[in-house]
Image (tube, rainbow, N blue to C red):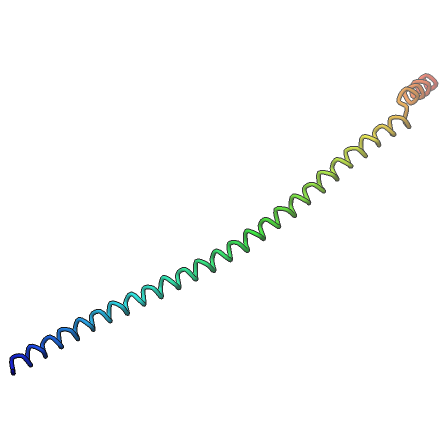
Length: 110
């Protein structure tokens, strides 16, 4: 009977050691799972920050496109105004008449 009790005691100690080992492994896996969960949370936060930055960049790009369109429109209007001014100056100066006046003045002073 004493041998049976000793054998049962040894098995209980062995089973307790195995239980401790299993509990340690479960705890380690739980810690690893917690680390993975934290990593996913960090990645989600980074993705959200990137999405916000992307939205800001897209808004800035649209604003720059609008400014460029306004700039291009301004240049086009300025170009047209300059052409009109050149035309008006040419009409007002009438180069043939101006040259004739210069030649008359030259002839008169010679």
